[in-house]
Length: 166
Image (cartoon, rainbow, N blue to C red; front, side, top):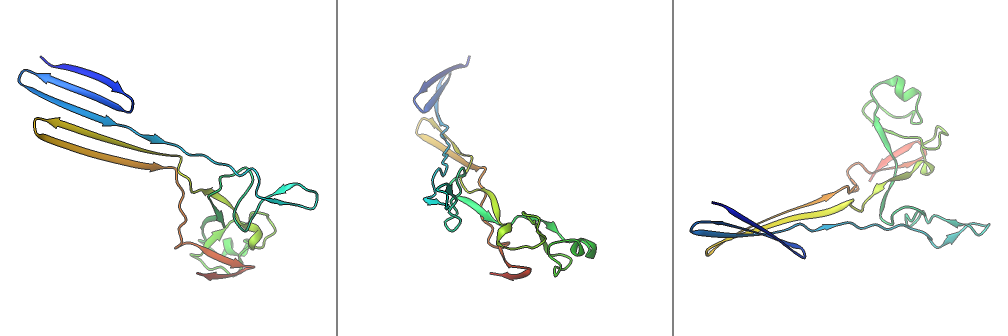
């Protein structure tokens, strides 16, 4: 005969199993965290008094305060035909395709865009502790989901159509 008792206390779930001569107690925790923010005023105004983005600090109205901002990569050049019809005429096969955001057929600082937020969608964990007589077994698993980190290995700086690597 197995009896299972489930009791929920604030953040703790306790499960007690009893079978004849032994008793085990299991305690589980499942913390979940989510954080959101949005820039509503970057502290700058245009000539008409309207609020504008602070590009130097990467504060963009309506977006999170901690974002990845830069050039969007659209793939790898596979042929000379792709290069000839692109905004990067000096590129070579195997080079990164940079998306021409404004369509002026020139890759420069005006082609930078908001790529993603560096703030995770959520952070969660699961811990479980099982006690049996004088023996305790604990396990902890954690996860961070939805975060977009900056990859400094692919960070490229452009000056017109010239390319230099950091």
